[in-house]
Image 1 (spheres, rainbow, N blue to C red):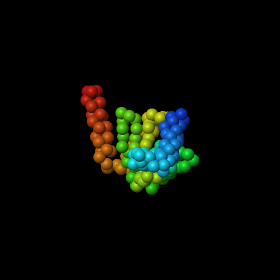
Image 2: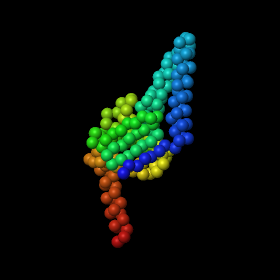
Image 3: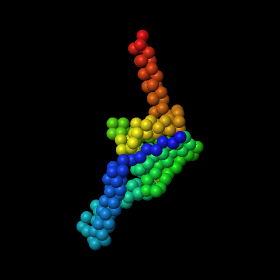
Length: 169
């Protein structure tokens, strides 16, 4: 059984598509100014470099997936008719940096590069975001059962159980 989590369409359009289009426009304008010999060409070069990075992350590397599909044997990140599919057998590394207050996760899969394996997930922008967060953390825990993060979560769960038992007595 697989679960699909979809990014809110309006938010995806604004955060990913429009931001990428704006970066492309700034890249064209900045490149044109550099070619014409602007007096601030070094600043424009930096801005153009940032625009190229934004275009790559938004459109090429699917760093902001529109759909996440978590199945029993694989996990997929999809956007713009592209998919990065990882079977559970090929997952060597699945690291999550959580920003719990902001409701965001930064996921690195296997050996991340500029073009694959890095995903920014804004949980609140997806349907069933609580389940998505739990499912992603379960995958991390199964891939890295002896990590410090997994040990802390197990110890916290044990502490809560003991706390509940002491309250009942």
